[in-house]
Image 1 (cartoon, one colour):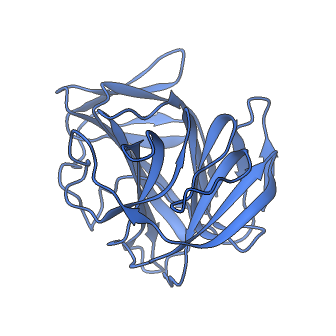
Image 2: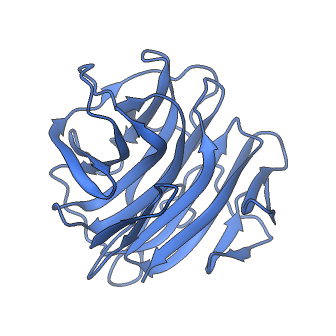
Length: 268
């Protein structure tokens, strides 16, 4: 797999061989509360996008707008049809105490049935007073993660054995119902992209990631800081899952009236 960077420093992955993206809120079994699909599916970046309940989709000069129709949550399910990798660029978002984004990555088993791979929430940490990545221990039981940072597509740090810490959310409850969410790392400012791939050049498997509009350090649970990076990825340790391709990824925003997908890339 190679990493290629565009002028805006967003990541595009060209994965070779088997792969799996990890992403967002799942609408195939196992199902989370409130993520039923609504009517009005559309094609964007060559992929089918279906609004979740209480959501409408429409095109704009910026990309595909995902907008809440009930003032509560806005969500979209993206059908990836056995992709080996996936990348999405959003209009940059800065987490605040009133909003959060839930992403759930779902793979396809050899018989075609779904396998939940990873569930991630991006929200503002009360303790750190900045954006943070939360992982859900109930998905696969991992108690530690390997965190990697990249600049211009090159690996600049690897930290193993990172143990997420529990932290209560402020304000609205986390979208998707009850989850065992723990903070993995936090970061200052905005984030703008989500990525997922199964097999990477540094031993990555089932690895979701976020990148930033400009390089910045991430803060670990022990309050140590990394060097400034453009992209951070996180891989569960000691987990053996069976799916080898990506079936579906879903974004579900809580406390946001809308968000915009500017571009997506699917790796066959």
